Length: 129
Image (cartoon, rainbow, N blue to C red; front, side, top):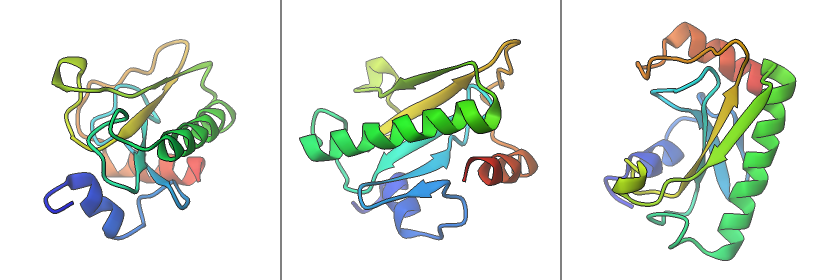
């Protein structure tokens, strides 16, 4: 869809992608709430999970499962949140179906929702690929 930031990322260079298959691609959240916060993004544009086809929803959550496992294995996360936001009131900022995969650590490694630093981004991409 023209003007959609996620469609632009989908169609752009792949150097920041952690994973890709026929249905989805995975990148780090630009403003992470935790170290390793990933976005599983549908290749097919739909506003949210409610508008996406069942096959796309299934495929997205299978990728989210894979990324949650990687967060535990490769980053040492003790837990992982997997969630999608539907609508502004629920925190959806970009109108394109995506799933958050947020590693959780003890002690917490919370990031202040600042833009990801390039050095940390490169390190995390390498560890999660």
